[in-house]
Length: 364
Image 1 (tube, rainbow, N blue to C red):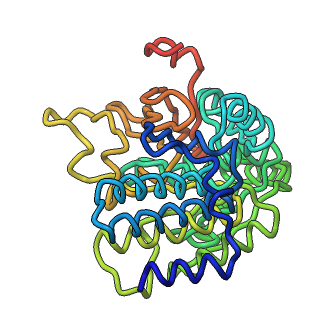
Image 2: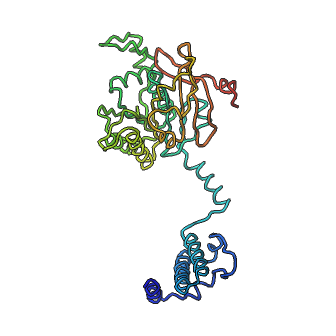
Image 3: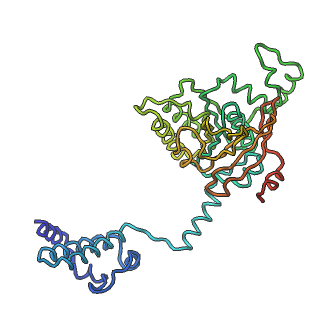
C-alpha cells in the first residue's frame, strides 16, 4: 500500500523522475556530503528527489534487495538534509561578524574603565552581578545605571526590594553627593545638603517601577513598557525576589522565572541587568578569608550563568571599603579578569579604582 500511495502521489504531481534524478550520483559511487547538491538543485527539487529515492528504496526492499534499499534510503536522507540546510562560506560569516560589530551593539558605557574596555553587550543580552547580602548589589546596580545615563543611555530600574522613597534616596545621594545617613526621619537635610540637591542634575533618562508583590507577569509587563518608553537597559533588583503563580517549586521555579525574563529581554531588545545572590556556603574560604567568586557560586540556578552573556562577581575584602570584582564570564571577551572596586560609605556610590590596578593584577 505504501508503494502504491507513493506512485499515485507522484503521478498526480507529474513528477519527471528521470529529470529529478539526473543530478544524483551513481549508485555505485561514494555518497557526497549534503553541500555537494546545493549548487546543483533547488530546495524544491532536492525535496522531490529525496522522495523519489525513498520510493526506489521501498521498491528495492519489497523485492528483497535490502542492500540496494539501504543505499537508496541513505541517498534520500542526504538529499532531505541538503534541502533544509543552508551552508555559508567564510566571506559571508566574516561579513556577518563585521555587520554585527558595527550595527548590533548596544553601545553601553558604564564609566567603569575595565567594563567599558572588555564588555560588549547586544540587545537582548543579560548581564548578571552576583554578590552576598549587604555587599552592594543594589549600590553597584545604581552606580552602573547612573554611569549609563550620563552617556545618554535610557535606563529603567524595577525594584522588588526597595520602595520608591528608599530608591529615590539612593539615587539622590549618589548623583548629588549627599550623605545617605542625612535623610533619616523628617526634613533634617542641612542647608548645605539642600543646596547640593538643588544644584544636582536629575534630568537623566531614567524610569522606575516598584513591585512589592514581585509577580513575574508584572515584571515582564514593566520590561515591555520600559522598552516602549525608550529604555535600552532594564535592571531587575533582584532576581530571587520574583514570585510566580505557576505550579513550580525550588530550582524549577527560578528557571521558569529566568526564562520568562530572558524571553522578555529578547522580544523587546533591552539589555537585562540582574543582581543575584550567591550561595552562603561559598562566600569565604575555610580560613575565613574572602573567596574569589565565580559564576559557579551563583545561588539557586545554574541556568542563570548559562543564559547570561556577562557575569560579574563581587566580594568584600578584609578591611572595610575595598572590594574586588571578577568578570567571571564574558561571552565576547576575556574571562576571569579581576579589578578593584571602592565604595563611598557616605553616598553609597561604588566605582572602579584606577585602570592601572587591573594591569598590576596580571591583565593587560
